[in-house]
Length: 207
Length: 78
Image (cartoon, rainbow over all chains, first blue to last red):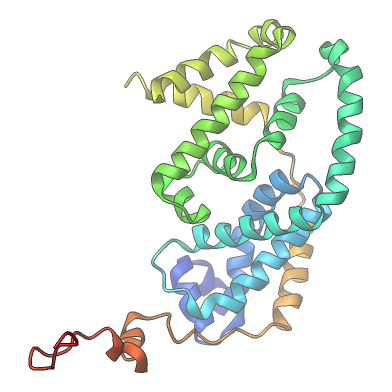
């Protein structure tokens, strides 16, 4: 009966129950948000086991800090803020290893570029997004893949609204520049339903 | 209206092209949930910091430093 009761409660109500000392309510919060958090973490970590670590650490940190959560923002935004910071710290921890991996990837890319037909736009996009600075990548991921508003993104990134928007816009501009510079990609992407022309329209409209 | 159409198209295209694959098996999420909760069981919730609520901040002992001196107080220039 208790479990069934918890399922119907809102995130804020569950937070209140956890703050009152009932860990079972936190279990319900984990069930609700673990999938979304894993998807977000996987975008930054690129490795499922590392992404799982980020999810676990994020929930532990959230539990530790829950007494200070006042509900001024949505629990999801607060949790995502913790996850983004945790992912950033993890990336810093593994920077040396990640750099080595990147070098290997770049070496492979040099060969692969001549035979782009064998690649997919998804892989290529992912690689270009990975090259973006962390804040720009965060804004892009949260806006495009998580479909969050700039207000929510600003809260998660702990920056003003305009900064969140600027980071997103700069990410788009960089992607556009990269793809425009590479002529072979320009003709290649033209086959994919005018993807970049749509993107250019958006960047110009927003500008 | 002109701004929204490209945005929606752009979102759909970029999302479909760049979606990450996450496990779909419910058993995977049950295992992940159990792993998280076993770690949480060993964790203690930290008490709320004293400065977390404005009311407590106002009652802080050093607050008097911010309170303007009464007009009757002697000026430092004199």
